[in-house]
Length: 274
Figure 1: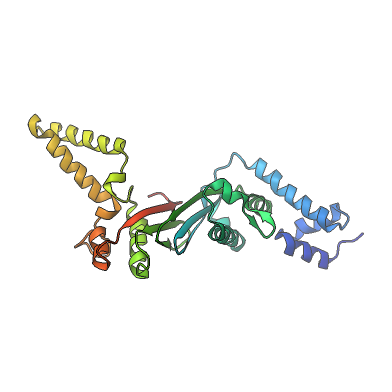
Figure 2: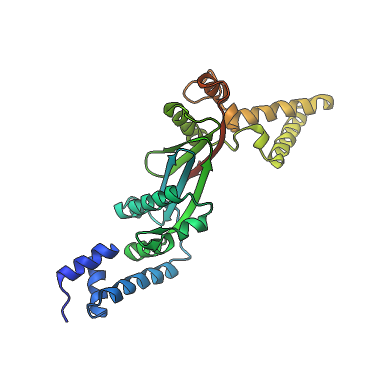
C-alpha cells in the first residue's frame, strides 16, 4: 500500500521526525500509524546507544522562578548547531515547564516527569532519533525560599537561580543578585557555608606564601587569616563587591532594600568554561 503525504504529515506532526524517516517508518509498518511511531522511537534508542560514548558538551540551559521555587534545566547535545535548533530549545522549555509544575527533587524525578503523554527520558530519546546526536539531561538544580528569582544569560548557555529570606523582594533587586551570581561565580552564599576543607587549604596557602616572603613565624597565622578574609570577599556572594556598584558589597546592597534581607541559596549552571 502506497504511503500518502497526508499520512507522512500526520506522523511527522505526532513525532517531530523528518519526512523521509516518517515515510520509511510508514512503509515498514504497512501504514500502521502506531507501529510506525514505535519504529521511530526504536530508531532513537538505537542512535542513543550508538552515540553513548560521545561527549555532549553543548546544549541549552534555561531557568525559571515561580514564587518560592526556582529551577534550572540543562539539556545537553554534541554540537552548537543542534543546541540552537528550535525543536531542541522547545524541548528544554517543555521540560522546564514540567519541572515548574511539579517541583521535583532530583534529576531522576525530572526524567520520570510526563510531558505530552511521555516521560521526559522518552522525549529525549525521540529527539536523539531526529537529530542523530547524543543528548542527555545534563543538569538539574533548584532552590526553595520565601522568594526566588531566575536569570537566563543571552545564548542559553548560562543560568542562575537565587533564593531570599523574605517575601516580595523587588524584582530588579533580585535580578541584580542573580546576575551577580552569573558574572562572579561565588562558591557559597556566606563564609559559614564554605567547606572547611577549602578554608583550611586557603589558610595553608596563605601560610606558605607568608613564609616564602620571609615573614616572622609569630605573625604567619595572622597573615594567613587576612588572606583567607580576602578569599571570602572574592568568592562568597554576600561579601563580594557588587558588580553594578563597587562602593558596596552584596550584603550592603540588600540591606539598603530591607534591613534583614539576605540571599539564602543560589545555583548556577554554565556550559561554557568560567
